[in-house]
Image 1 (cartoon, rainbow, N blue to C red):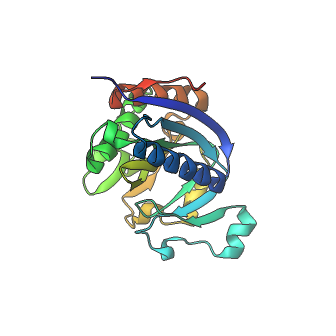
Image 2: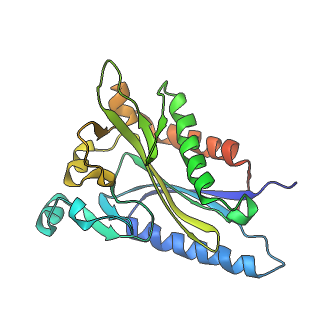
Length: 234
């Protein structure tokens, strides 16, 4: 059986709105290609960093945004309500945000499995840094569990997706070396539990991590977990 093909794009540092608009264009193009029997939709994996922004998922609560408009402006942080799943989160420099725009008809028709495999990609990448990423029952994303050095559960990757005609958009946000203080402006993912907090790879290792290295690891692990091949765009 022929493997799905995926085009990889590194969008660099880009505004959330510009990336969201581009996702919608790509998603609609894939949906259009699906309707045309003579065309095989071209899946895409987009990786990027964003300028500081808070985004609220369609099931989120606006009261989980702690900052008021004046504080947002003073701190240079944007705010958007989105159509992805999940509650509120932060995106910014030093965090890799990934947007797989996949035609799941080429993979499998199972949203739950899709989210679990997004988590698995990140779990695999964290192993390269000797970090044991785990799932926590009842919470989407990837976590580091309490240890003798830290008694809290730490969320290191948030996930929120959206589907239209089995074509995905939105995705995951992996904290590599973002400014973690920006998470204090929200109730991250709407989780009001003092035993849970947010962390990053750099925070855990107490050293700066090369973003490009992590992007290449993510690119490789996506191929391994989702069993596809990369296509060079003409």
